[in-house]
Length: 404
Image (cartoon, rainbow, N blue to C red; front, side, top):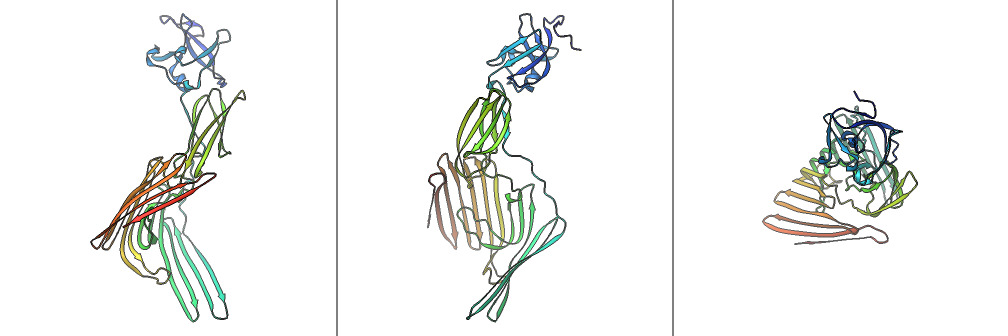
C-alpha cells in the first residue's frame, strides 16, 4: 500500500510523493511515485527511468528502497527541473544525450506470406509471318505451363516453316520450385548457369539450386542506407534523398536513427529536417554511394549447377554434350566489400577464381578478380580489374582483363 503523498515513511527518512511528471515537454500526463529526502533531493524509480528511455546512471548512485532501486534526479546528465510541491508536478529538462537511441525504419518490414496455389495451367504463344516475292516465312513460339502447390513446370517449342521445310524444335523444359521464406529456387531441367563476375554462361540440362531474391520483390540486397540525428523536444523528421521526400517520422527526445532508406544506385545525398514543437529546425546532410554490385553485410547469394551442356540450342531439341558442374558464392563481408568465389568443372577441364567488389566512399566501386584453370595438362590464368562511378555531373566505367 502506497502512503499518501508527502507522508514520511518511518525508518527511511524519505517522503513518498505522487507527482505528475513531464519530460522535455512530451506531455506524458502520468503520475509516478517519487522519493524526496530531508535535503529535498528527488529520487526516481529505475523502471520509470527505463520506460522513459533514460540512460541509467552509474549503479553507485542508486539507493535501495523496498527492494527496488531509485536514482537521484541529479545523477542524470545535464538535467534541470522545476518541482512544484503544491501542484505536485515535476517538469524535467535534459539534453538528448541523456536518452537511449530510437531506431526507426523508412520502410515497412511486413511481408505478405506466400500462398500455395491450387493446380492450374497456362498457354502462351507468339506468331510471326512475312512474305516477299522471293520467299514466305512463318514461325511461332509456344509455351505450355502447369503449376500446383509443389512448383511450376514449363516447356517451350519453336515451330517454323522456311519454304517447304517445316520444323518443330524444343527449347526449354523445366520444373521450378520456389522457397520464398528462404529466398531460394530449385530448377530441374533446362536452365542457364550463373557465370560469376568473370565467367561465361551456358545452357545446360540438369539441376540448379540457388538464391532467388525475386521471390520477395521488396527485399533489398544492397547495403542499407541509414542516417542519424538527435532531438531535444518531440519532433517531426523529414527525410529527403536527392531532394525527394521519402519518409516522415515522429521521434521522441534523444538520439535517433532511421534505416532502410529507399535505395538509389550511384552517388547521392540524404538530408534530415528535424522540426520540434516550437517550430525550430535543424538540418543534417549526409552523402552516400549505392551500388548493385554490393551485398549487405552478412547477406549471401549462391548458385550451384550440375548437368550436361546444351548444344545447338534453338536448332536441335535434345542435343546434350559433356557434363558440367559450376558453383558461385557471394557474401557481403562488410557494407563496403562483397567477396566472391566461382568454380567450374567439365571433362578434362577445371577453373577456380575469387575476388570481390569494394566501395570507395564518395567515388564508386573497384572490381578485382583472379582465376586459374587447367585443361589437358595445360594451365592458364586471368586477372580482371574494373571501376565504376555513377554520379552527377559525370559517370564512367572501365574494365580491363588479362588472360594467359
